[in-house]
Structure formats: C-alpha cells, structure tokens
Image 1 (cartoon, helix red, strand yellow):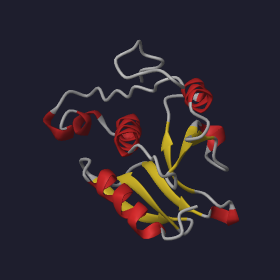
Image 2 (tube, helix red, strand yellow):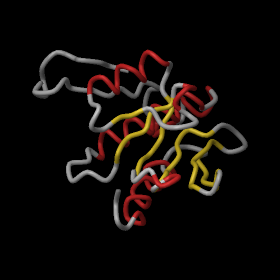
Image 3 (tube, one colour):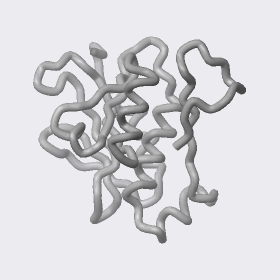
Length: 149
C-alpha cells in the first residue's frame, strides 16, 4: 500500500482525464473515471475495506482476458472484490517498479471498451486500436507476443 496515495492518484487522474470526454466522480467513496453521462472505465482504490492495496481497476474484454492478465503477471494484476466477477482487473500501483506505460495502456483500453464509436475515432487523433504487450516472466521486449489485447 502506498503510504501517500495522492501522487499515485494524480498520475492515474492525468492518464484517465486525458482521454476524450473523460470525467471524474466519486463512486462508493473512491475516485472513478467515466465517459460523460456514461459508463465507468477506471476506479482508484486505496486501502479499500482495509485490503492494504493501492490500485487502479480497469475493464477487460472478458473473463478470459482477465484470467490471462492475472496468470501472466500475478504480482501486478488481481481480481478485485465486487468488480472482478464482471471481468474487471486490478493493477497494483504501490510497487517500486510500477510500469506507468502499461497502466496508461490498460486505462486507455478500458476507455475504448466503454466509449461510444463517435469518441473512439477521436481518441488522440489516432486509430482505435490500443494494444499492450504483456511479457511472460523473463521474456525480453522484442520477443514474440505473450498476449496482445
């Protein structure tokens, strides 16, 4: 658990609110990020119900993607309470080696899963596909994809 969640939340907030039509509001007492008048795509939890974790929770395409993420990197990903059964995955943010590029990719992918088509085309003026490479333990960048979303 991060002793001071403010700088970690600030980074998550910067990533999430940079996406088109993204807004923030409290959801059950924790910051949540959603599309204007629409669905949530990320939540920030710090010591939620005393679990000792500082995490961002993002949507996955389905339970299969969620399970694969957790299997490939269980030190980073886990199935969160409440949202896990619906295919969401939590990413630990309190590690010294937090990969903020990966966090940004997962938040963007989650946004794409809930954004209406009109917004997906406007995302940063790029094409709609946001991919993330998840490397199997010990695999070097540039090797074959362990997973591509």
